[in-house]
Image 1 (cartoon, helix red, strand yellow):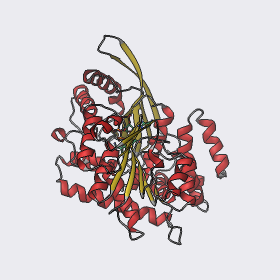
Image 2: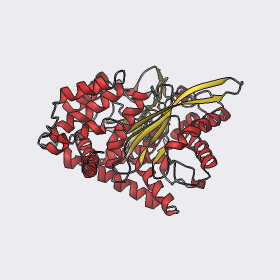
Image 3: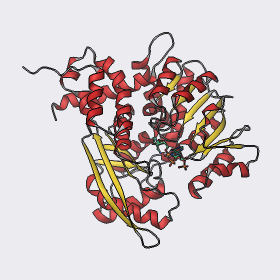
Image 4: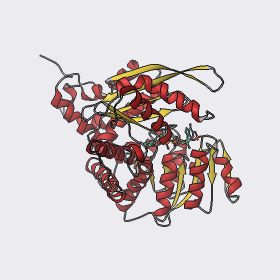
Length: 451
Ligand code: NDP
């Protein structure tokens, strides 16, 4: 008779650490999810017997490949490319492509693992994946970026497809890079399919995709505040990052009546005591995205602001906070500072920006705290809607998509309440998101048997 491998959480995590040496980000992401899932499956023998969590924490496959390209000076450059296909139990693999020097297997495995739960939470049929390269787009000419994207896709194309795996953008990959990669895919395969999302509107992209992650995070924040009878009007917000997610989160905060005090980049943060208006946010978008400039230049354009070199913005007192830059940018100490300064709510725009210690601080303080897999799911949700539009060969109107995004974020919030309500007015959104995402994927896996 088969005996179920019903190991306890520390033993399970010991195994994860052993099987994934030198992959701290991946181990951290699994630990955060396993803490909640272990409690949930305590009395559910089937999940144990079928080793469901162990299987979700083992990617279906990790593809690693060489990417050669030639720079403008004729030098041959060699980068490493990856695609991590974590789980396709509920739909084709789906998740962004990141170009950043910090990209390695651990980072992409953590992102693909998180993406699996996030995509399930949206209610759309999408599995979890993630990819990228240690290529650094900073300081590269447009033609160098084009050559790199083409070389990257020359290998990636054989692992993806509209019903197989549908990548999108992420850090360092915006509309321009998606265009270069889509062009190369089409050239190699001679097929025009919805194989990437985040495409330009002229060739199958969806309205509001660029705005969706930041806007969605703010909708989620507003949903959390509403459980306390509050809204964003007059609230001060501290935001990190100055890329796609951060600038659109800032824009939506301003639209809903809040005041944004900070934005940042890897060089430090800018504090504008007068608040970032739409004009100032537009300046940041143009400066950071189109001119590839530094956030510190903001203080020359708007002299009342101050620049804080090498610092993160978590020491600036605020009502709400949105970390929108990168993983592990908000540590335990920062979390304690935010709580001590009276921060009421925090929604993660980035993936895993808060370290485990910080997560525990927020939980202990009973903060309204949304993990990225719930609050930043708006981007992939609209990517899912882009896939639907591509399949139908039509384009929905902006108002329709705005409403769908709001409804999806509301639905994710409801799912978190279902599994995260701890009574006494406290909702553990981390637990709610982990369990709701896990249950959907796990139940599909049970239906497939041992595969
Ligand atoms: P962008 O490339 O547009 O912007 C990234 C921003 O983060 C830049 O301001 C960058 O500064 C800053 N940053 C990057 N690394 C660091 C670092 N080590 N320390 C401090 N700041 C840093 O990326 P996105 O806005 O698209 O992505 C931001 C986060 O949101 C990521 O975690 C991503 O995974 C997540 N996300 C994105 C989605 C999307 O739709 N784009 C969807 C869901 C999640 P600098 O210019 O100096 O590098």
